[in-house]
Image 1 (cartoon, rainbow, N blue to C red):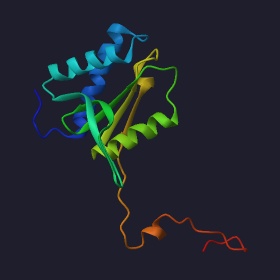
Image 2: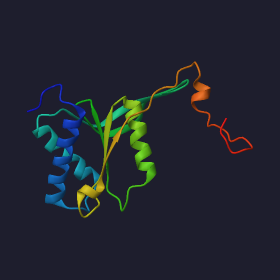
Image 3: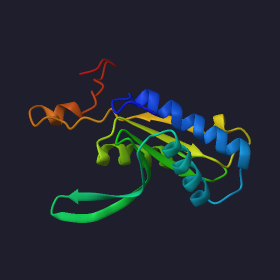
Image 4: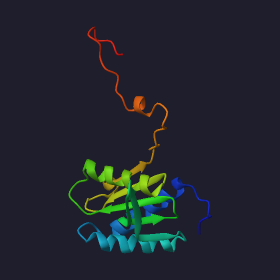
Length: 154
């Protein structure tokens, strides 16, 4: 059993251990939903709280959706887990997880692709470093320095 205040690092380590256990037993080639059910089960056996297919509200200006997407797993309200079963992970998969972390306001996420021979090659841990730009000077925060004619930056 885990303490209620377990750090995201400890939680991610245990999620990865459970995913490796499942992959060793079942191997690649199953549906994502099968791995999701097994991983949720293993995580709960450890005494951690798991939310499966968690609906996440989305607000964009005047558009409000009760469910903008569903997070595969959210563990201990600290770690988002996005599962994949595909030949290779792509940059858009990483961008998707970062979007989920930002919308859920979670510090850490795991992207786990079960469609690999060795699971360690299918795991990516990502950290949410996103910070809302402040109103003051926010335009300058996003402006890249331009090069002057002599090659120096402005």
